[in-house]
Amino acid sequence: MQTQIVIIGGGPSGLLLAQLLQGRGIDSVVLERKTKDYVLGRIRAGVLERGLLDLMREAGVAERMDKEGIPHNGTLISHGDEMFRIGFTEHTGHAVMVYGQTEVTRDLYEAREKSGGKIEFNVENVRIHDADRDAPYVTYEVDGESRRIDCDFVAGCDGFHGISRHTIPTDVRREYEKVYPFGWLGILSETPPVNHELIYATSERGFALCSMRNENLSRYYIQCSLDEKAEDWSDDAFWAELKRRIPADQAAKLVTGPSIEKSIAPLRSFVTEPMRWGRLFLCGDAAHIVPPTGAKGLNTAASDVNYLFRGLTDFYENGSTAGIDGYSEKALARVWKVERFSWWFSSLMHRYPDQTDFDQKMQWAELEFLRSNDAAQKAMAENYVGLPYD
Ligand code: RFL
Ligand code: PHB
Image (tube, rainbow, N blue to C red; front, side):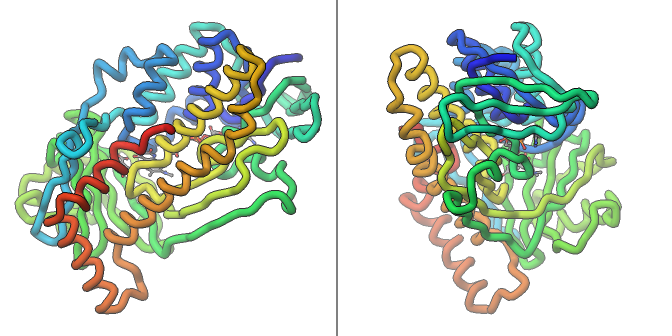
């Protein structure tokens, strides 16, 4: 088989890239290790930046998102019983949108199927060959049968546990990592959200987040220790702990109900450099991870897709290699700014096991500064709604 771009990974990065390329007449094949149902069953991101919204529109897959997504003009931050708001629109002129990653992925799959774009599910043993030469190719197995696709370029969109990153030789690749000493226990429940805006809450007992998917579907998280297991938490225990971490007036109006999903995610900051090696380009979680506190993972994957898509179209339409040659540097410049924001917001809001009284006072002082200082709020809002794609 022959195509222009082999895209490894059928998560949001891979599918969005495929759809954008297809709109410009550039052919791709998407290779996904799991089934479509498995990918759609993963409950992940909920907040979309304007850059991603614009890319969805450019890819022609925004109809349902623009109809059902909920624009958010600000967010709430609480500290014990104190709560303040950071207005996004008043500080930046922009908002974010609450629309689940599951829905984004569903819309992208539907568009891909409608347009007849190729996706192979259940692929195994994917290997990238000759990425540092002029004629790369990818081999894989499906139903026990070996296949090969020759291509111009390979996009590694296969997430943190994928193989693409490991194709780059260790003497070229440099990795930076910070693992946080806690995780997030999250639940999804068919209950109305406690507030019409998200609440990022810090308390003596640790962090909590009140988020949502729609007016009758709520997503809540609490900071937990790494040795805990989701199945050890009853719904009642979860709700009781959440109520202790959010302001009393919010806890009083929290509507509880059975959880329909419950899972624990570890928190990690991770970047690999470079994001390009020869004809292989890394995109999204394959190249970087942020802790979820700033809602940046999916959004940063989208900014990589943006730079790579522009670079590839410039190559195919104008014969210019400038965009693809500059891809790694450009993407990484933005990635590091997002890493900083996610690390800062995580450090501000969580309880650390080895935290001293002094460290705690510093968190409180920083929160008080954020509550009372317009410039600090503007900086937070600019990062939250998404830095521009330069
Ligand atoms: P994905 O989504 O991991 O998709 C990669 C795909 O590649 C497949 N794959 C392979 N396919 C073929 N061959 C192989 N060898 C393969 N290895 C892997 C996988 O099966 C998968 O389908 O990466 P992608 O596309 O880069 O997308 C990244 C986002 O999924 C991720 O950044 C976000 O979910 C992070 N995230 C959030 N991001 C936000 O922007 N806003 C949020 O509010 C937000 N909340 C979250 C989050 C992530 C969370 N978890 C569980 C990690 C909340 C949570 C709890
Ligand atoms: C979510 O709704 O899943 C969500 C929202 C905001 C975050 C992280 C996760 O910062």
